Image 1 (spheres, one colour):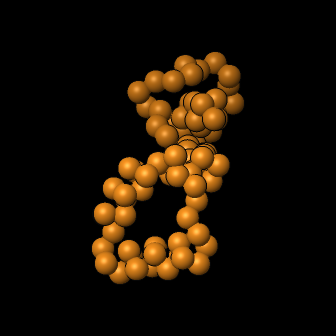
Image 2 (cartoon, rainbow, N blue to C red):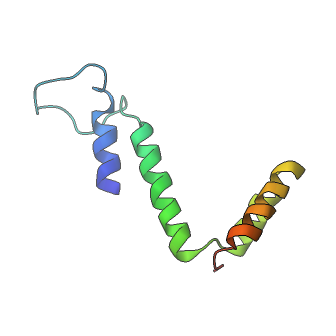
Length: 87
C-alpha cells in the first residue's frame, strides 16, 4: 500500500502534463496525494474493518456524531445486517 501511494504521489505532478523521461526527482514539494491514494486508503481501511471490526470506543464516537435521522438509518442497517465483531 505504501508503495502504491508513493508511486501515485510521485506521478501526481505529471498527471495532466506527461513526461517521457525517467530522470526526475521521485518526490518533491509539488507532489500530492490524488484520488487514487485516497481510494487505496479507503479500501484498505474497509478491509481492515471487515476483518477486525471497529473498536467500540471509535464506534461510539462515530455514532455520536450522527444526527437523529442518520442514527435511525444506522440502527436499521445494523438490525438487518448485524454488527461486526468489536475489538
